[in-house]
Length: 119
Image (cartoon, rainbow, N blue to C red; front, side, top):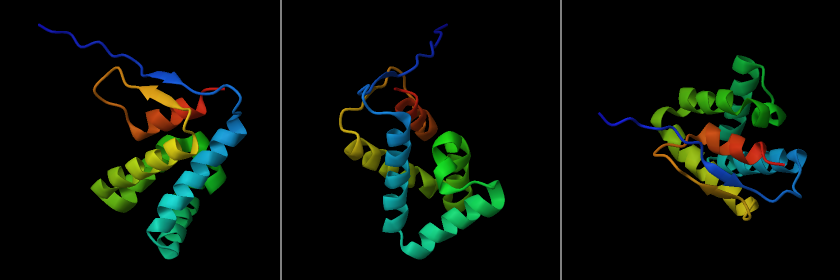
């Protein structure tokens, strides 16, 4: 019987970027992706976060799993496409960030937390 070992992704990021900068990069990436859906849609998402989760946009980096779940509630399976677009935007904004995946799965929340946890 084959056992599957869970490995955490190997993450590297420039050490000169601080958490505040990384959090703002994430918020900017999310804003850009949501804006691509239209300003009304962006406001609907932020209103949902505020009303249903008592979360404002500045709290998203600290509550990324809640944010990912909210996207699923609002967009269903299409939330995966939004998560991918957010990750692309994040990569463009932090080009020195490297994520080498050593396992078959890496969730949106894990990817974002990996960026946010490196100082």
